[in-house]
Length: 283
Image (tube, rainbow, N blue to C red; front, side, top):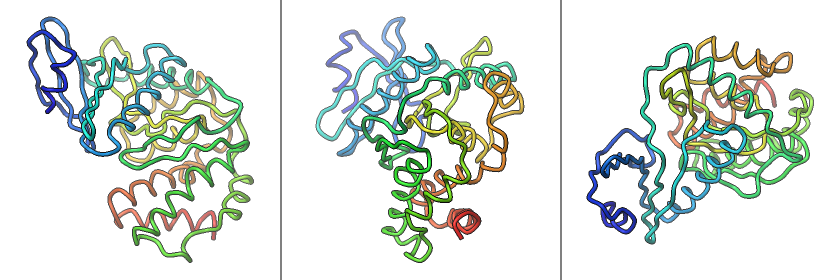
């Protein structure tokens, strides 16, 4: 199937080599003569839409900070089968220079702002849909487009019960008291250690975005959830665009979103962490 889809646009003979590409998609290196491409393949009813939204995210990142994300070339779909064809990046060891570059360029991206929180359409985080309704405050956006959809999904899947879920009004009130208001900025949206690459000469690039105009502490919080980022990254970020006072105390609040995503993707092993944060902030 993959070769048949590619044959429609690559007229020359080509080699197709499986490469690591995450848990959701199959990934391949395509070599044709002296050209190399990275492709993602997904089979499912939402495959084409998922790749469409990823392409939008990559384009937004490169508009904010040119060259910070790979160039996406095209999408091919045939019913439930879809390919995303992208620039192939040769990753190298993640050295300290890469952390410096990542921190600086992420800080630059976070200065690419909008008048409203959200995005013109929803997209995906992993294989889950992500709501991006426009909002005028960070408390409204986080409660309505981040926490509540994942909380309701967790209830529907049997991971949470009704009494464990705070009301929307309570969430908005608490968030309004805690999160400092900043201009909505472009965030990667899923910035764990596997979603950035070092590509030589100390240059970092980010991949697999789940973008929106949101609060920049979302990206910082996700970067602290599973590790993979050194002190030089955080120092470089703060040297370029200092975080608001108290940001370290808000990390777990923003991490709640990603823990809910992992609860819905992987099950109850994440429930304890979710409940600890829910009780801490929302009683």
